[in-house]
Image 1 (tube, rainbow, N blue to C red):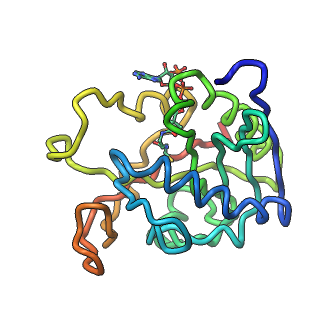
Image 2: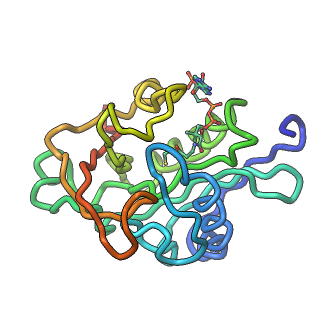
Length: 201
Ligand SMILES: CC(C)(COP(=O)(O)OP(=O)(O)OC[C@H]1O[C@@H](n2cnc3c(N)ncnc32)[C@H](O)[C@@H]1OP(=O)(O)O)[C@@H](O)C(=O)NCCC(=O)NCCS
């Protein structure tokens, strides 16, 4: 596992769209745990607050041999993240934000530094492209005393800070979403945070 067979590939536009089913699989395999608790339902609709990949602009995949073991994809501005453009505009030009939809690595490949390959391929590309001023993603922020929070969980926040992403507190919002602990068809309100890397700095 890992080692010399690990390759990084970057895709843009239509070529990225072709990866939709690979990202569906990654999402189903990687986001079932804390803090996402996404039901392992493959296919569209498995993550009710993410848009489909059909309008993807850019994707990075990590392959071990032929197998895609990790990756990231994201959208241009316009993705409905739950924050109004009016609110966002107080911080940054909404048209100049690249929204990360997913960053995920298969569990058996985690903890080997592979995420660095993703960040190193994605973030500089975005910084150079189309005058983006920020890269952002949304985090479902469960309370620290959530009954299903694993005791061994290493907070992702520290990792994001070390890569230039910061929580923009004034953009926190509530959204009704369904996770593995909600009754089918009955979304519950969750606190959502926006984490952003300001490329103007
Ligand atoms: C979060 C995720 C992308 C990180 O990828 P990864 O390749 O496993 O992470 P890395 O091995 O590169 O380690 C990332 C950092 O966490 C630290 N880390 C990794 N495993 C750790 C562990 N078990 N305990 C403590 N820290 C750990 C590393 O030291 C590293 O720190 P650094 O940035 O200073 O180098 C991956 O674990 C994942 O896909 N998780 C499930 C989905 C998810 O949470 N996605 C993120 C939001 S979309």
